[in-house]
Image (cartoon, rainbow, N blue to C red; front, side, top):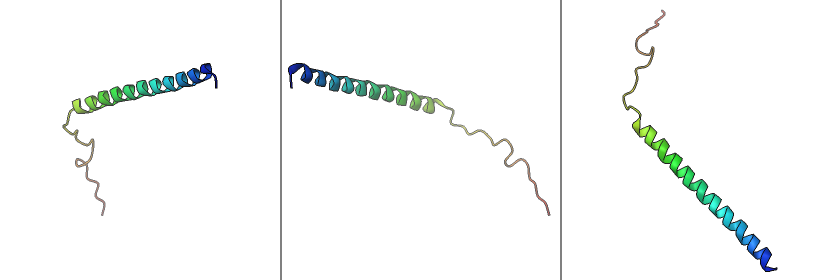
Length: 59
């Protein structure tokens, strides 16, 4: 193998590693943002639109 071939192979591996690192960091940032949004949501539960207010009893 000549030096150009070795360097080309190593460069490709480095590019893949950098791409994976960037992707991982982006996913981590998106996860942190999603968790932040979920934590900021109001915790009070909204009443069900009809459950408990309408009784349909047939004999």
